[in-house]
Image 1 (cartoon, rainbow, N blue to C red):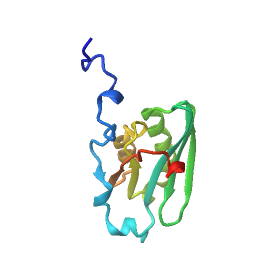
Image 2: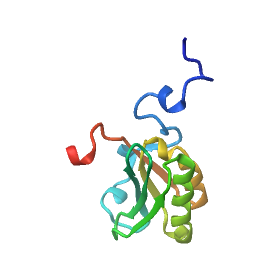
Image 3: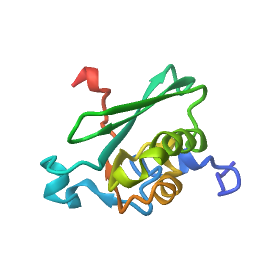
Length: 135
C-alpha cells in the first residue's frame, strides 16, 4: 500500500531535521549579542526524555545568567511542551527577547510560545544525530 498524506504520520513524512523548522530562523543567523551572551533575555530550550518520549522535562535556560526553568512533561507532545514553555516564560515576558530550540517534533508548536511571550525571534538548532552523552 502506498503512503498518502492521510495515512502517513507527519513525523514520518517530514525529512529528518525538519519536524518543526517552518517559521524559524537558523542558528547561523543568530546575532552576535545572543551568541556572546551580552544581554539578558535570550533563552535556550530543550527536553530531557525518559524512554521513547514516554515522559520527561522541558528546560529553559537564560543564556547570560544561566537561570534555569524546568517543568515536568507527563507525555512528550508538541502541545504539552508549548503549554509548559508558555507557563514558565509568561511571568518573564519582558525578559524574553529570543528563544533558541532544536527542531525536534516536541517543539512543533513554537510559534504559539513565541507569540504568547512576545519573543522577537525564534532560532533553530539542528538535532544532533547522536545523543549528547555519545559525543
